Image (cartoon, rainbow, N blue to C red):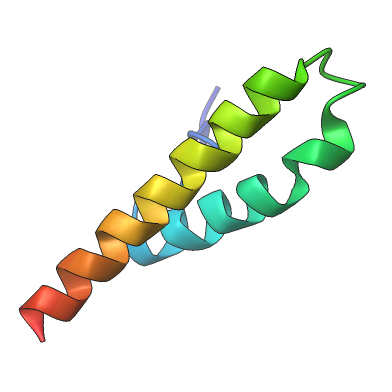
Length: 62
């Protein structure tokens, strides 16, 4: 299967955008994905943490 690629972006800036989007929209899909409120909160927290760590790192480099 030529051209098969992972769903997660390879560039860090693109990953930040993807995870911000996931954190913003995961609540919309909780029923379809059979997620509990705790799981949704955990996903949102992890996405937020990833974005915060990346932002901190980029600011430290500046």
